[in-house]
Length: 429
Image (cartoon, rainbow, N blue to C red; front, side, top):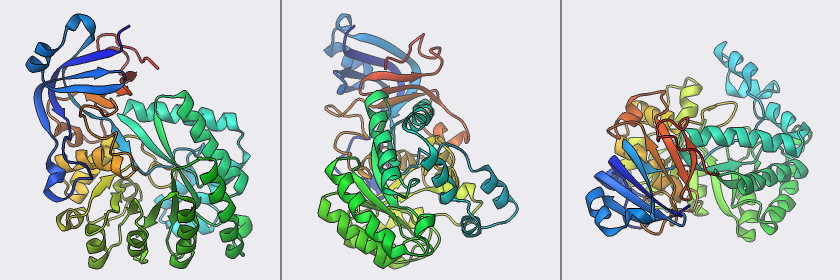
C-alpha cells in the first residue's frame, strides 16, 4: 500500500499557516483558510496543501491512495496541553457533594478530591493503568485530539509517580495517541506527609532527578495554590527541576491570586494554566513574556462557577492564549475539545477562529512542540481531523456535539466514525 495519501473534496481547510511561534492578538484569528482544498501526505508528513485543482495538476493519482472527504472541514488535530488522563474511576461522591453545595476545599479536607484518586492509583498494577489509558486514548482520538499532555500527580510517592509516568511511556509505544508526559508530584501533599510538608519537599528532589535521568517526562508542574504548594515551596521545586533540564509548567490562579503568574514568568515556564484570578499586572507580565496562558474553562463550567479566565483581556493585551480540557475526575471530566471550544466562545467571548487557533497551534507551543505540530504546512507531522460540518464556525456553535468523522495521526488513520462516513475506511494503527 502506498505511503502517500491524497485527501480531496474538503469544503474548508484551516491550515493555521503563519510565522513560527504562538499566535497573539489579532493573529489568533488568522486560521489560513483554504476552500475547495486538498492535502497530500507522504511518509507521515504533510507534503503539500492548497486548492484541489492546483494539487491535482502536480501529482499522479495512480501513485497515491486517494480519499474523498465529502465536503467536510479539515484542520490540525487538537493539541490538548493540560490533562490528567490516568485516574481509573470517576469521583461520583464528590460530584453529588458539590451539587449539595459543598466546596472543592471542603471535599478535599474530608478525604475526597485528589487524595481519593491517589488511593485508587496506589492500589493499581501496571496492566490496569495501561488498560485505562488505552480506553481513554480511544475517546480522545474519537473527538479529534491527536496529542495529549499526560500529568502524573495521583501517586504522590516515589514509586507510584514513577509507575504513572512509565504507563504513559508504554502507551506512547503501543497506541496512536501521542502523550506528552508531565511530572506533577507537587499536585498535593500525600496523607502520610500532611503534617510534615518539608519532608515531602525533600522527597520530591530525588523523584525529579530520576524523572530527568530516565527521560520519563518533559515537564515539571506544580499546583501553586492556597492549601497546596506555596510560592516559596514552588520556587524550591522549580530550582530543582531547572537544574535537571526539565521544562516548567504551573497551575496558577485557579482559586486565588497568589503571585504564581509572576513566578512562572520569572522562571520562563512554558505555560501558566487556569488563570481564573488575575491582576492587571499579571496580564501584562504574561503579555510581555514567552509563557503561554493556558485557559481551562471546562473546569469552571463543571464546577458551576460564574467566574471564567479573562480571555478577552489576555488576548487584547497580547498574551499567547491556549485552550485545553483539563480532563480529570474532579473538575473537568470531558475528553471532547469541541465542548471546550463552545464554552470558550459563549462564556469567555472568544471568536471561533481564536478558539481553533488556541486548541491547535498554541496548544502545540504550550507543549513545546509547535515546530512539528499544530498547523498543516509542508514538513510538519501529518496530524489532522475531518469534521462533518460545512463551515468551521459550526464546530463551537453546536455545543455538546462530536463532529469528528476522521482522525489521522502521523499520516495514518487512527480513528474513523464507524468506517461509514469515509466510505468504509478503517483505522490503520
